[in-house]
Image (cartoon, helix red, strand yellow):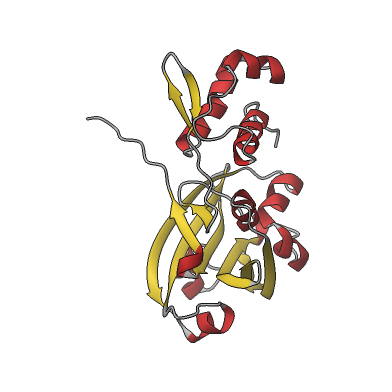
Length: 242
């Protein structure tokens, strides 16, 4: 699928902020400067700025410009509830080295129990993937991912070890749009203790989600179990006056 006009601007500004070219409190160049740089309209620039504002990077101020309000999380990997990003993207944004170990990679058929758990239709062909995610040498996330094969053809262990989302977007041309998520604290299982470096913790933070593409198809179900002191979940809220 063709790239939206605002995406290069969005990624350029986001990269400049995360690399500290523009720090918290700084003001961005004007809309006119970005429009000239990218050869686009000011409305296109505003779309990119609007998205970054919703993600907590920017704060437009009437008469003054657009101010950077992003402050990097250095002590923990920062996973956003509102945004959709890969593990590698989240770790990179918070300056952490990320690696992935594949535990299971196989094709399965969706039966009634899997359908009830995930929302996929009975009889669908699925990829079933279990991965352990490392920050440095510490195992911090145990992921179970189930992908709809008809939408994600060609997935492999090598891709799952690197970045599935990069493959879906750059190779298959998928546009990933929406995710529904639920976050709970759960008592750690024997499997959690076996795979994760939980230390003295006897519980994990569990994130369950369904992810949809631009065609409205749910292509992924995921269940991620996190070591509590190695992650924090952040969302930017905007107060709506009644």
